[in-house]
Amino acid sequence: MATSIDETILLTGFMGSGKTMIGEALAKKLNKPFADIDKIIEEKEGMPIKDIFKKEGEAAFRAKEKAEITNYLTEASAGNAVVSVGGGSFLQKEIRNICMKNATVVFLHISWSAWLERLDMLVETRPVLHGRTISEIRTLYDDRQAIYDQHHYRVTVDGLDPEEASDKIISAFQ
Ligand code: S3P
Image (cartoon, rainbow, N blue to C red; front, side):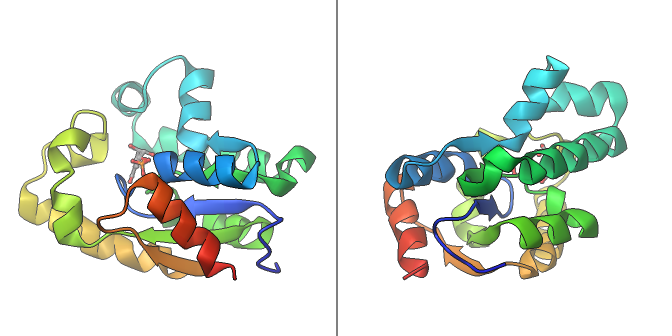
């Protein structure tokens, strides 16, 4: 699709890259509704994502993720919104394709060293980090970069607060 700022903007990128906070700031600036797919899933399921992983397993979570992203992006009301998706959603090719077709995809890139500073804050709520050593997490980070190759814009967010990062996204469209 055409990469217009007047269409839906979808933020993807590794967990903890700031998709939710940056998405909220961006939506406010552009006067668009904001949707966080992980929050939609948590509200529907009545439990945090880490409990969905524990009770139903990762595959069940991935299926919900696909259903919600598809629902959201194909709803007429979602034609001009800001949406953030979970960092693992792009593992599914169908999700990548749906997002590229129905939104302008912005990959929020964060360097490994900047990300590492956030690790302590993330580990409690991110089940994919549980039980992994730092070197295994590094491998996960490296492997995951390839799934974000499908995007319209790539914005590096190292050292930027949500206000600065959202301004940088808006500049990318100009
Ligand atoms: C995941 C990222 C999380 C959440 C779930 C799985 C992943 O979202 O969807 O814990 O596999 O990378 P954030 O990217 O918002 O952390």
